[in-house]
Amino acid sequence: MRDDRGEISALSDIPEVIDDLGFVVLRKVLDMDLIVAMQRRIQALMAMRMGEGALAPRGREETDAMMLALTKDDVRHRRFIYDVTRFIPELYALAGSPAVMAAMASALRLEHTLPPVAYNNVNLRMDYPGRSWSEKLPWHQDYPYLNPLYTPGRSLASWIPVFDCPLSLGPVEFVAGSHHWGEISTIEVDRGEGRIPVWAIDPDKAGDMSQVSVFEAHPGDLIIFPLTSVHRSGINSDPKAIRWTVQARYHDMSAPGFLSKYNAPEAS
Image 1 (tube, rainbow, N blue to C red):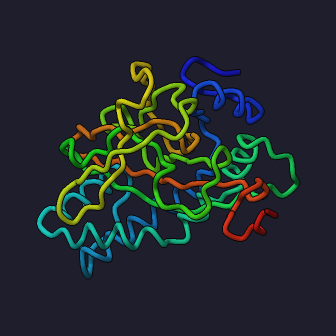
Image 2 (image 1 turned 30 degrees about the horizontal axis):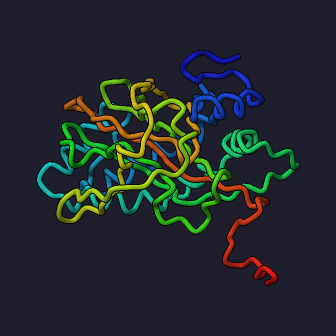
């Protein structure tokens, strides 16, 4: 079963909903032990950065309060937490967990006992409150970003909340059906000194942008979408909270053209 927002109750429904909307929302399908382990690792790293004697926070409010206090006066703390958490074992355990892999295999219509799904570009994002438009990712697709595993039509992305993500924290937004537009040409957006540029879609090459879908998300939820779905991050409007999410990209290793640089040259 599914509803009009792309929420489903069975893995077998994933391909149909993704084909229709360009995204799918699965509620409470992930292993909460893995998510709690990630929360604990983040909290321990923050306490370590605070200095000797600091106790690790517990719960969402304490975690956000410590992180905001830690990063208020010294951006190096923010960069340290961001860089270090990109490589913690819990991040990869969650992104490559059996529940995620089963959902990706269903989305790609793979029926193998061991689905040949690779994943990369694994990241833990921390989106702080009150960001201006220049720091908010504009409407974009994920295919333009450098990804050696990307195969058109056979690559997907995940969006996973680590803590609760109500609408006030600006969860991911989608233009329903936009994956049918294919790979849209891009415009490079300079986000300022010290920040990498992003590639926004060329609005003159896009279709109807009026059908926007956004929904709150909670730990245990999993959102999947093709790399050609037009989406963006919302703005975190809660002055006391951080949006913590995991993103990764998944690829069908059995697809023709996967890692095409290794393919034998075609006969002339």
